[in-house]
Length: 127
Image 1 (tube, rainbow, N blue to C red):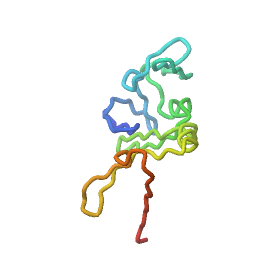
Image 2: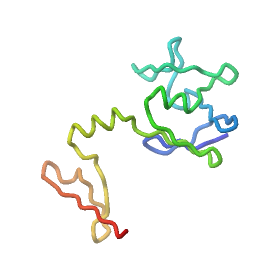
Image 3: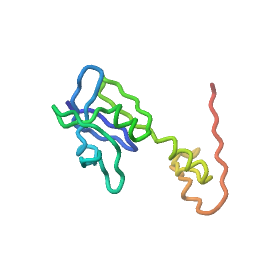
């Protein structure tokens, strides 16, 4: 079956479903199998593939990557969150992620467009 993977973007990949579990093909995710686990570039993680279908279970992959996982089996959606270590590193850097939001006239404004100038971002909600 084809599912939607949310992993810093949105893409459609092939997966196998077994009850409440999704099985993912490593090559669909950009990983390749080595004797010591799944590898992408110089990063390798311990992962065991199902011998019947050559796929890795989505929850096992998320645990090995140290990333939170949310999945909706019925809708065919898997969301891999950012690892806590990556979030902590970003917080320590004191750099805000680039964000693009509409100004009062509806024109998009990006934080990166302000260069080295200081900026103040106010957020407000009516609730």
